[in-house]
Image 1 (spheres, rainbow, N blue to C red):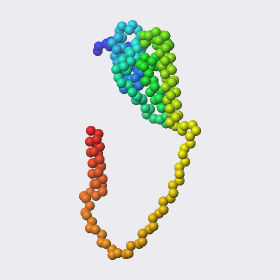
Image 2: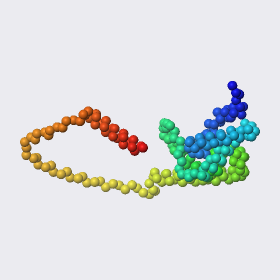
Image 3: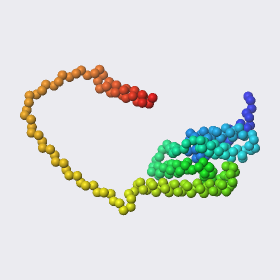
Image 4: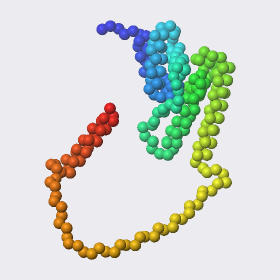
Amino acid sequence: MAARDPLEEEFREFVAARSAALLRTAYLLAGDWATAEDLLQTALTKTYLAWKRLGGIEAIEPYARRVMVNTSTSWWRRRWHGERPTEVLPELAGTDEIEQQLDRDVLWRHLSALPARQRAVLVLRFYEDLSEAQTAALLEISPGTVKSQTSRALGTLRRRLGEAAAAELAEREPAAGTRPTPRTPERPTPRPARPAAAPPTAPVPPPATRSAAPGGPARAAALAGGTSTAASGRETR
């Protein structure tokens, strides 16, 4: 039995230990799980190829994160980005959880509208809890640039979130000084006079009944169901 490559074993251990955390970071950078998984796979592949020249386990994770940031920035520039889907929780037990989910959706919508560099700075500074110096080293920019990008991004988020809250409030409440217009009660419509009773007539014999279709109502229902199923199949196709 051939011995396994020690570097491959180290890589497997790294993936098992850190891939979940890296995937969460990828989601914050990408905005949806499918793209986040692609982003993580790209980062892990490049990390594996560069493993030998990275010089130690302490350099592995920063390298993987830098690859994810650079790759997401590159993808973001090449693609059209409108409103992006967000992950939906499988179960929302109560009002508080629903409101929290809506808050996350609103925050992500505004976060995703930021320039890629500003978004990456916020993710690294406030989600990864990196210092300005660490963020600057990972993004290969100066600490001053990190500080200015952070300030601009936070200012944009505060302004947009404030505008969104104001717009939502304006939609929910009537304008100040206005009152709802009272409805004018409708006049009751007079009921028409009942027609005079018709004189009695001779009884009319019932029409001849047609024989029921084979299978009766059950067969008819089955045929109707089959028709709708076929139609839905055609629509699906």
